[in-house]
Length: 363
Image 1 (cartoon, one colour):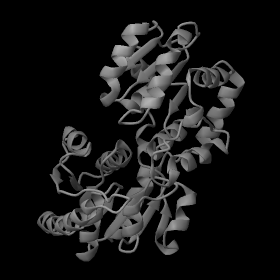
Image 2 (cartoon, one colour):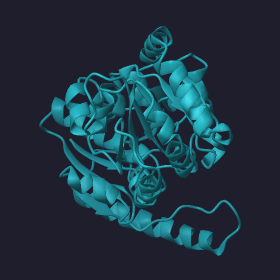
Image 3 (cartoon, one colour):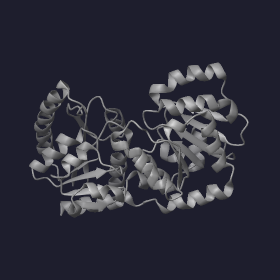
Image 4 (cartoon, one colour):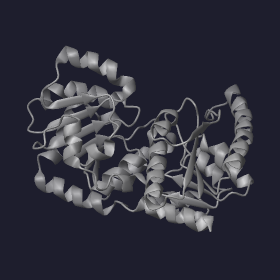
């Protein structure tokens, strides 16, 4: 079976793709993979590191206002379709899967035009432009939130969940803690802003450092590569407490998550899939800078079920951050109730579900 996967831009589109590949590799030795991304996207770094064959096309996203750049984007799209057709024919692809981000537009469209079976995987509760466009051409649309089905042709939709939910299961939490320097005995809160980091979260954390020093728990704070140097300078001015560990990025996130009691993060779909699969309570600070405010809708799907608490960015500061962390981490009954509710929402077999859809299409 020859499988092409395309998705890029942010970790939220790439990690589910990598998790699916790893799950298929576990289940069968007969699958060959090719990943198509862009040269300047995060995928160009993450995919080759996993020893997965990688090819790139040149494509950019649409600007949401009138712009000459959009004329160039249309040209790049058709050039991308042409380049993708050549790559797909050369590889002799059996199935093509798009996991989101504008790069999968020309790749999946090209596959559909070549009559190769196609799937798009929509991680969010509100789909992006690319997947809405592709929904007319693909065979199947795999979703992770029931709310997403209203945006797509009903006969194509199948609920699979997010493959990253499968990958985080069965990890060694103790090893995860030790790998980043956390104590194995203290309660732990992980604070991060997604693969690129988030400045407003970073600012609130830096201002909370002196308060954290007095707490009976420890904090692992991941700034994102882009923000690390700026945060480091600020931290040097105020001093970092012993119970706070600051890292730019971690590459073993599933293992680290397995040892964490509470997470403060953005509400990207892949993060939420991981948290619910593991049953980790969370304080979600949705990014207000995303299409159709989809992160807030993602977050509310958890907070409405008691699996998470919502903290809007406009309300985020050192005081509100500490208050919400304390209210969960220092209240065992509340923490355990949230764990149970989060676990109930998880789809730990999502990678197997998506692979089943691939096998059905291949037949």
